[in-house]
Structure formats: C-alpha cells, structure tokens
Image (cartoon, rainbow, N blue to C red):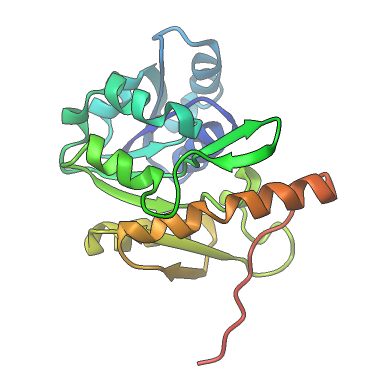
Length: 216
C-alpha cells in the first residue's frame, strides 16, 4: 500500500518507519521538498521504498494518510496538502489540541468539538479515524514495550475505515483495541491528554499507558 505520512516529528518518523518495515511504500511529507529530517529519513530507509516530498505530494501519493503534526498546525497542514487530495482516503489522525501556557496544559478545543472533527470538516470527503493519540511515540509501534497489554482507542464515522485501521494497529502489536464509536468520541480521547501530560510531569518519563480492565 502507498501511505503518505504528514509530519517529520518523532511520531511521524516512528510511524513512517514501522509502516515501511511492514512493506508499505511510504512518502513523508513536510512543508518544503528539501526538508532535512524527511530526506535523512528517506535515505536511511531506501531499502523499504521510502521517499519524501511536500505535504501536498505526500497526500497525493498516499492511498492512506497519517496526520502526525502538532495539533495547532493540523488544519494548516491539511490546507497545504490540499483537501481534494484527501478525498475518499482513510486519514489516521494522531494529533492533539494541546496548548501550553503559563497556567499549564490546556486544550484549545474540547467538550462540544474535537480537533478530529475540525480536521474532518476541513477535508469533508476524507474518512478520518482518530487513534494512537493517548500513547507516546515509542509505544505506538511497540505496545508491549512495558511488559503488559495496553489499551488503544479508536473513533471514526466510517465503519470500514475503522476496521482497516484496527487491522493496521494489530500489525503494530495492539490487541486491546476499543472502538468508542463515531468521530465525536475523539473529544474524550483528546481530553485524556492533560492527565497524561500531568503524569509525565510527575514521573518525568513517558513510559506508561492506559490499560482498561473490564469484565463481560
């Protein structure tokens, strides 16, 4: 499969690398065609059909897209990639609407709307699926890293798209995947982030995750 990964940060690099290792053709997108991080990544993964380009080029290239940028830049990136290049495609949204200020961590959208819903509105013909936003990058592709089974959440309006994303998550090693329903459920996934950020501040490391224990 051809996959476009929009973003060159730790999340983008981690997911792009794993997707390439799984045998997909991956193009990493950034603002400029000569982005050093993206070109270095492509060079290091040439054996896995890796390439790089602009956001627009990566969005055109991918049959499936991964949005892995800072939440505050997400809508700008969709615009730069051109919403028409998202048409009919599954878009895995890993972004969070985090806002860091003097008073601590806040969400710039919550309760009655989510960043995922804004992304869906900006690319109305896409099939946006929210997932992986509640774990750090290393756990995204290595969920057994901590020695215990962790839980990952998923939300989206298209059932077939969620099924395909869940299949991909299983290839990453995830077994406990909870479908929370339509994309409006991404609000609650995003609202978990202030707690995660506080735990990170208390423990001074990101090596933790949610595990939902239930019966029946």
